[in-house]
Amino acid sequence: MIVGAGIGGLTAAVALKQVGRDVVVFEQMDSLKEVGAGFTMNSNAVTAIRELGLDKQVEENGAELTRFVHHTRGGKVLAEWPTGQIAENVGAPIVGIGRPDVQRILARALDGVEIRYGHAFTGLEQDDAGVTATFANGASERGAVLVGADGSRSTVRPLFDATERRYSGYTTWLASAEFTDFPAGTHAQWYGAKTILGAHPIGGGRTYWYAGWTTEPGGTDADPKQAVLALFGDWADPLPRLLQATDPAYIARADIYDLPRRESWGAGRVTLLGDAAHSMVPALGQGACQAIEDGVVLGKILGVSEDDPAALKAYERRRIERTAPIVKRARMQGALMQGNNPVMSVVRANFFRFAPQKQVLKGFQEFLTFEG
Image (spheres, rainbow, N blue to C red):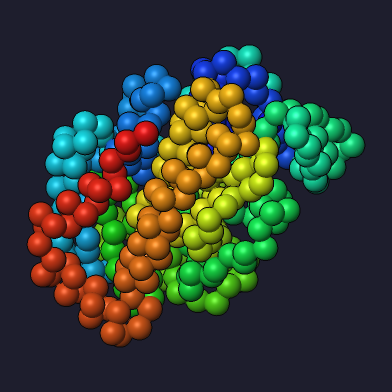
C-alpha cells in the first residue's frame, strides 16, 4: 500500500509492479491532478528512472539542459558552469520537465495498478502478518507493507516520528509559462538581496521558473503575480516578460522546510519515501530526484524480499546514507544562494568569482550519480 500519488509514490508503484509485487496507491485528492510547475530531473534521477524503462519518455517530453549560468539581478554574468560535462561523465542527461508530464509518464506505466482517489489516510494498525490502513471516507485496507509517500506534511510520519520540520528562512513561488524566448539548454539563476529567481525550459515551448524571498513564514498573496512582479519586475530581461507571460492561477507559493537526519523512518511494516522521509530545500534540485531514487531502490529491495520488515530497514539504511548529506548540503547551499545578509552576499559573490570550475563540477557530479 502506497499513501500518496506524487512522483515518488508513483515511481515506487511502477518499480514494485515491475518486480511482481501487488500494489494499491491511495490518494486523498479526487483525481490525479496536474499539480506543480516543473523541476530539474538531474542525471541521477534520469539514471534511476532508466531502470524502469522510462528515461526516453522523459527525454522526449522535456528539454535537455547543458549549462548553468549565474547572474546578478541586473544581468551581469557571475559564472557559467558547463553541466553538460557532468551528463556526459555520468551517462545520463539533465532534463527540465513539467511535473505533470512525469506524472503522466508514470501513471501510464502503472498498467493495471489501482489508484484509489478520495482516500485521505487517517491511521493504521499492524501486526506480524501485515498492516491495516484506515481512511477518512470510512474505507480500510490490509496489506503486507505501507509506504508513506504523502509529502513534507505527511500524515504517516507523525505516527512514528515527532521530529518537527525546520523552516529554511525563505518562501518560494513556482510556475511555468508558455514562453519560448529563453536560451535553449540553459538553466539560469539571478541573485538580489534576500532574493533569487531561476528558470529553464521544460519542453513544449514552456519555461519553468522559481523565485525565492527571505522572509517570515506564513505569508499569503492577494495576487501572486503582482507579489512576484513587485519583487522581480525590474530585473534583467527576459525575467519581467517571463513573469508577465505567466497565468496567475498557476503560480504556487510555499514556505520551504526540511527535515534533519533521523536513523529510522518507520517501524515494522511501515516506512516513508520522498519528502515524507527527507524533505529538503530546493537549492540543489534534488527533492523530486531523490524521491525517484527512493522508489526505484524500494522496488529492488522488496522485489527480492523474504522478510518485508527487514527489507524496509535495509531500504532505510541505504537511503538515509544517500539522502542525509544532500539535505544538509542543500540547506547550506540555499543559505548561500539566498544571500540573506550582506556577509552571505559577499561570500556568494566570491564563491562564483574564485571557485575552481573543475572542483565545482566534480562536487555536483558526486550526487548526480545514482548507483542503485
